[in-house]
Length: 139
Length: 276
Image (cartoon, rainbow over all chains, first blue to last red; front, top):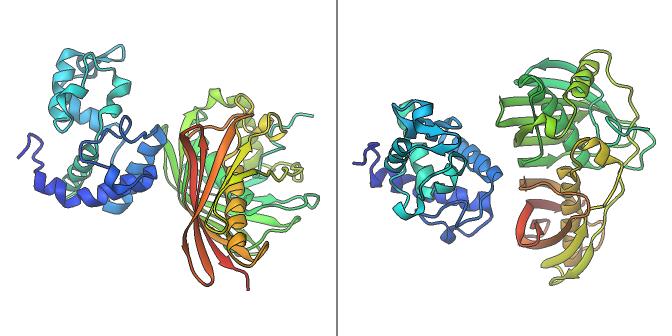
């Protein structure tokens, strides 16, 4: 079990649907979408695509995924100032972020991380986990 | 004469605005225009939803065209018709507006929009907030004087290739200037997404007519997965590509994409049916 109590089995149970939604939203082939694909760097997603994907996930899985929730959860008990200063994630914030985004390969997270660029780190698996967290909190 | 609220504004009156949740209104199509494409009817519904969402965020943000899950074409609109507009909004905040909507003429639906999403942008980048507040006051009060719209030109493309009846390729250049740029938007001219939608629709009809039946043999039923991924600016050159995804006796599904360089900027699936 991961630190966020989300198992690989849980992720793989919804992965095919999430990958199909991402492929549909980005107009790419499903086999281009991998669990660790960075949506922005690997699949050329734009900010509108993130809105589209979240909107489609909400409809498919009947959950609400509050915007900014991922950052808020990554921050944990840290205050906003402890997590980020002047648009840059603090070392303490970065440690939290790395733990939260454990599915993101370490070498993709380059210090210092700019807050605005956090979505660049999101992978297909990140979106699976967003859905699972909301399913669990609604249960 | 200023084209603001004239050249590309399609709400004359707001009847009821349960701000950020539900809104109804109307638009009278001027008798003097040659035609009023269904894509502009969709624009009219989108603008109605936009007014409610702008009011919901106290005129700090405005939505721009983004995504329509489905646009269903159920009828025709003739010059002189009055559109009765409604939108049901599931979310309106600083990030986006999500809504469904419908336009009716004489009680009959002509265009239905489902699962639409417009990203919100800081309003000052596009408009003068005070003029929008004033306009909203007018629309929710006495209503605007109708018949300001004088039509938009029918844009055409230059065909560059394709396999007749199966695929088509073309280029399209966004005009450098047009009256609608003064209204859409005053501080940042952007080619309206619904004009691109209309272009894509006609491009798909053109491809279908190559496969069988000739010009005028097909009509649009609906567009799905309509998406505009970035702003189109005056003078932009777009590469259009269409391909038949499915075809049957009486229907055809065509995927249309618009690219600026390599970048996909707009896409949609178009479902057509053979005319009776």
